[in-house]
Length: 202
Image (cartoon, rainbow, N blue to C red; front, top):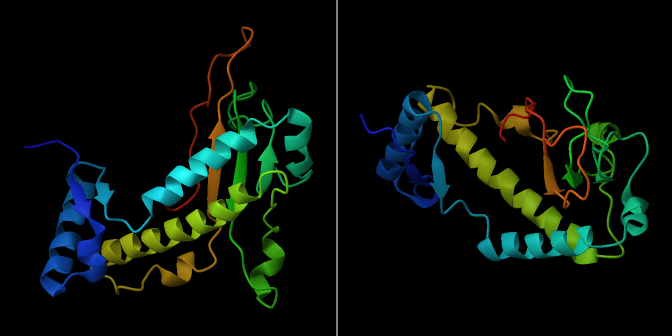
């Protein structure tokens, strides 16, 4: 049996005729059952947007520490905005990860009842394109993920919109991570400790 990770074209599912959609669903289900992974092409996430976000992230993380800390919000546990180097650690570890990061999350209308559960995104004044592009990229990932879940639902014999209510205004995040150079030997040389992700799609 061929154990190579297959690559599937999400465009076949989004824009294709019924035959292409059915084939995509079949191959996606087979990949998850027999390989465990699948590569997705034509996913609708613009390459230029990804490149721009990487460039802006590099610019943001190059700012002085005191400037970046303006975007660190106490009490949010890093759910929005900046988290400085050495603050986060895996739940089973006492040693901090050797990284800093910035998180962008769900935005909902002020009139929505769930609004109170989500802190506002922290917009960077010193590097405004970083969070502007980040918000756009976040929405692109959300759309592509929703299409994948539709295909998964069909493969499982469920209604195409089965997951819609479960992901509508879901608590997903986009995280830009920077691993700064290690200047001196730390207690642990682990950049990011082994951990579990709690989100539906990683």
